[in-house]
Amino acid sequence: MTTFKRKVFYLGGFDPRGVRFYYNLAKEQLGRYADKTGETVIVSPRSKSSPIRSDWTVRNDTADVTTDYSVLRWEDIVRQAWIRNPVQLGIRAARVYRDHARLYDFATVRALAIGPLVTMLYPPILSLVLPLLLALPVVLVALVWLPWWLALGLGLVIGGAGAIPVLDAIRAPWLLRFAVFNGEFGDGEGSPALQARLDAFADEIARDLHADHHEVLLVSHSNGSILAMLLMARLLERHGGTLPANFVLVTYGHCIPLIACRRDATGFHATLRYLSAQDFRWIDIGSPPDGAAFFGANPLLLVGPSPRPRIEMLSPRFHRFYTPETYHKGWRNKYEIHFDYLRVGDRVSPLDLPSLTASARGIEASVLAFRAIV
Image (tube, rainbow, N blue to C red; front, side, top):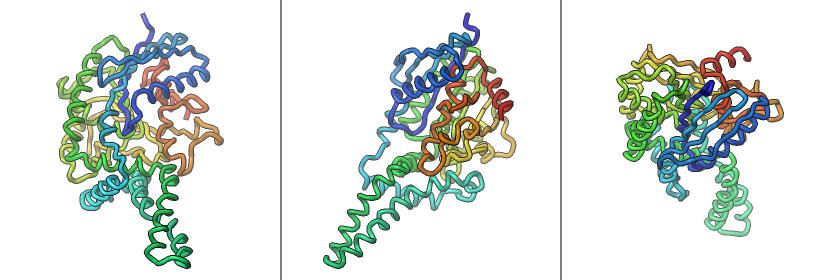
């Protein structure tokens, strides 16, 4: 009999790369965990148990821990929403930001966190301003030899071409696609395809919810946290508002207010109100330097003053677990910071995902261990 057995359901963010990327990342980072702890950790090959779920097993022989790990897959929906034509991306992004100007509660977002507001606004601004700034000197020089209209056209072409690598480096096109996807979320329930996928996810979790695991974790990252709200409502409704005592929701770098602060997201507001009245355990981990995360922002407070879920909001304090030479900081590393929750630093944190996956500690003990360190 295994000393400790856990189940992890992982719900990732708006990422077209799919399960292969996340399997390789998990295997790499669990290897780092093993190297730093001296424990023997083995990751099985991945298997496809259903079209929407991929599984593997993490076995810590040293601590006698087995974790059954399942990725809930929606990358096919992401790929369908991934706008490749830059003109189409610009047109749809313009529509979304026009709607934001009319329907978004910017004051509330600003009060919750400045970082996500900056992350929301800099891609469209830079996508417009940077090509023009790069084009200006080209136009001024070209005017010496060319007619104004030809100089302007040449400048815009060169400015646009020069801006592309800079915008790619700061992930502006990815963030614009992310903004369009969430901006077109309707009333907060998502597309029919996404709603059907969430129903299927609830079926998948229900099959393992009462198995012989010491703990069951639903772990979401980034945009997956928005989907996790809709998935949690489905799970609670199916189980009469009561989930097993060993079930815990974990959100990494959540961005739930992106939908919750839209005045027209009435369906999502109703979901949050329903969750606010339920009793379940929720641990949120968000980093202040993460410009895509709402650090310390309880989204249930957006719909009512006294939410019932037992929510604990923690900073991962990455600076304590990385050396100054490897700590991700600065604008070029904002993207990396957003994925550091899924990695092992130079020092093992009890709250990074590899530790929650392989450690002999349950998640409540991991929270206590983290508090004792920092």
